[in-house]
Image (cartoon, rainbow over all chains, first blue to last red; front, top):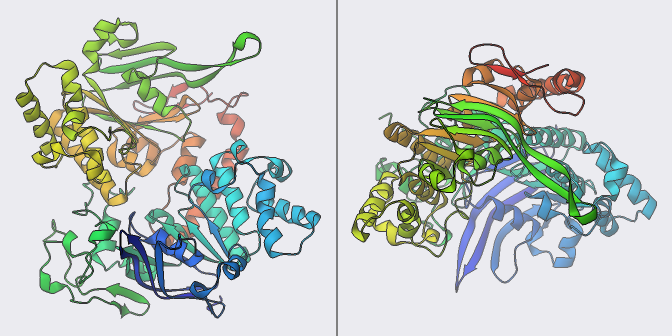
Length: 331
Length: 308
């Protein structure tokens, strides 16, 4: 097991401009992804998980976004690279799998050409070599007839097949890190299971680091090695997957886990997190951001300036409110 | 009295082509299905996208015309009623749509959205109408002043509850919920599901719950029908389906549910592999030469499976 850190985020802050002010959607996030490791980032929509992924890839609209902090990769800070330099990293060292396979693929290009595209930029392969590699990739992502799919357009394929092509595009140049932004959300359950198994298999074979962004805790439980739970732009809990599911500490993590209809205890009432995720403009910038959604807890349970603290080895939790936390119904 | 009984329902869409764009073939979206709903229960319709579950729901409520078959609601066959007679039944069956963003008209206030069914069926004064709308808006957990707002002022979960309030205003007997929570976040999803259970008790509603998420179906439903390519592959009480699945397709669906316990991870992968092997090896046993499933056969009082 390689434990070399591959990618290090240090105090990353991504702010978007709304009228004349900047609001941080990703607020002071530090996270390390090691070699051969799957790190999952979980949270509800609007918690900043996709914004984080796009910041690493440098895909935010310039002029409307402000990026601060460090994204260290191979001894360089990706945030300080020029577009030209960044283009050499994207696709080669870091691959990305997008959520919706239909919009992620170019409808006017055959699948084969799309897989070859990144090789054209990043390698000196000849046409024949590229084709060979593309066919090999299509085979490795489990496409039954690579020769035919190579010549097909995205609309000729089913959703699951398209997502396989997207994965093939992402791993075409053997990147050391793959960012998978909700890779299975748009797919049916059976296809989701296949894609999950495929990603895991490829990850083991190529020893890639994966940043898995999802809102589905089931997918996390099946795939991740470490999990970061995000709420309102901050990481509120960070632990390895077994610890997180066995001993979740932060109130948000516990609430999320309690709100899933589980297959074991049926017909019970599900837990509901009160209130709503505050919008970017109205995010509480001071104190515990989860405070107004657990109003039955006393104010003094919260810290004034909550920080991510190591409560047991490799288990980090933000704010002190987890210590005496209870659900309103258990008293 | 039969509450709702579907007999040999078929919905075919014509494929036109060739000379004069004649009908050359049909897409059999729903191909000969029969099932029954008892009053007060929740019936789950499960399947992958394209299996015809939504079409089934839409043809029961009359949004899609059925090609053949009977839809018997309270001893009347809805497919044979005249337009005028059918009108009376419209109010008893309501629908909750999948996407709370596109199912509410952005230019209308909540008051107008929720009052629309009332305006179609009842002659109320403006004050009465507002009162009634506010009553249901409060029932779904929003405040009475919210009726003057527009849909964009609400979050996804709140919008879905407005959609539910609209479905409730006419005191329907049957609600068809087509993927009511798949567009929502987990925590919001929990809120809507809890709420649907509450109002079911309060108004004695019957649900036809259409979803592809087996976790939610298990949580909500008393009986479940599993569809594949427009046909039923298995039908039974929730326990039958989850603890004793018989058809390979059902087994596949169940094996695909992600396990929430990371300890079972490898077991889950193995399990899926085994089921997939079985699926490949015994395909002929479960599917006929055209890739269709066989007719349902009863194997116990509550459980039927499509086996030859």
